[in-house]
Image (tube, rainbow, N blue to C red; front, side):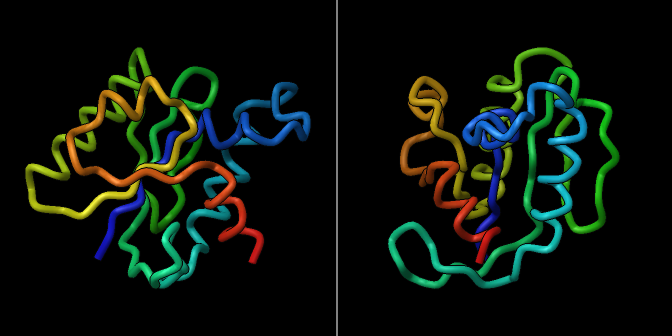
Length: 129
């Protein structure tokens, strides 16, 4: 089982669909789609991934959005990147396999060694399938 850890701001911001006019609304829509993500999806390497409930880091205007069933929200009190790294450290320390979804190279560099990453395009393709 793999825990998908999503940098919500990065994924929302990867598609110029007007999200900046309603950040909380864009976050809510994406969270609803994540809640409906199938339990098995093709991974970034093409192999099937068995997914647990996604862990999604929300910050700023999206911090107060409702948590949909089947999704765990991490409400960052400050830096979303700091909250995401802390969540990944906690998950990996508990022995969980983690796949982080972000295009942020600086954030990726801060993750524990061996943590796999995928870009927002990979996730969007899974959600659009």
